[in-house]
Image 1 (cartoon, rainbow, N blue to C red):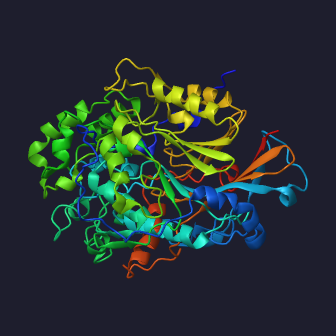
Image 2 (tube, rainbow, N blue to C red):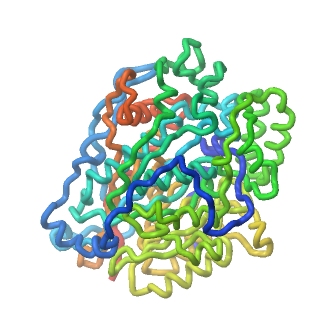
Length: 579
């Protein structure tokens, strides 16, 4: 029986619609992609035994370390102080673990019998952002306050602090088993720009990054534009955000564009493709269009009328303009009003093959594996889906749900759906964890793939039906919606995790155990970055900026306060019947 997916809660226009910008996908090239020199990876790490070995050792490790919620939201969560206006953050009470038994009844004594099958971390929607990019659509804010993030200049310090959290955590909080890998479920960058991909790869693998493009001597973005529409952090101007309580912080822009150092993850990591990784701004393909030229050019549109902004957002939400014709016409109409900025070739959008080639570059190996899931076969075919070994009893499957035809919602082509079915059959003697960027309720985009115009596209309902047909599937783990949401899907769990760009800025630890009583448990535990909750506006160190990143995100005007989800979407034990 084909069960329908849960779409209703996200049918409205969400914040991603407003934030989506111009398209990407230049003509394909091979592995000889010339990567820039701004991102400097750390020296190669020593060989790692790999995720399978670490996960296989989990049962023994649990007896040594034991369950421990330290460093997770089980113990504490950032919480606001005071009322009204701009609110400071401090230490708040943790979120207790909820046992969910919709798909199986919990059996007594399982905590004494269980053995660990997998222990890992999911990152999603990091949105590492070049805030000086000429095709950022900050001007959407004229139609909706939440269409621009005042804190987005701090995405790099923020993600490094998240990496530091994982490196300190080291073990799963529910079982004590070693964390064996990290997987990102898409939207690693924001504009599908080469420089953003380099920042992402360097942050994850270790090295130095400078979040500054264009003129290295001067910031050239909306935050020194003098426009009241945007937070002007170094100016006395009473802009829209200062009127809501945002502070004035002298030296902020210089600090935000200063070099950032990442230790890299101390475990292997894998990468999954999102719409912001494959489409410029998450919406538009660029091959053969105006977008690739505009992205590397010297003109930037900063503001438009509210009516124009709402018209553009409405078109994006309905998917009526997947090629970006409305954007092209808008840029032409406002040509004389654009700000002159410094062109930068590092902002060029990447094709799927170029994206894979960047992952295969040995400079970004870190703890491995080479390619971070992608292989030479992915480079040759241009397909961005693959399977990988998690442990002796568990296989991982990473899907590509981005529609290359355009629009921010997702789907799968027939060839990938058939590959998924065959892979699940091939590994029918192992449990399967499926990863993708889009959740089921955001997979309703059937725009044809321009490289495969005759191929059908398939929505979230069809993908759920395929997964339900295979009893080895335990979970489908995804992102995109920027919210925590966990739903039972008859024979498996769908686990969607909040982003690390919008508050509450979370990632998720997932541990899988065999309870040896006919049930399997999936433990989900949310984590925040390692940055202190309390901020100091005078502390512009890398750590201070990471703390400020969280607090500015909490206070962002127009932000969705429901992204943290309900208690049953946060820290959980999800039971499944498996005999």
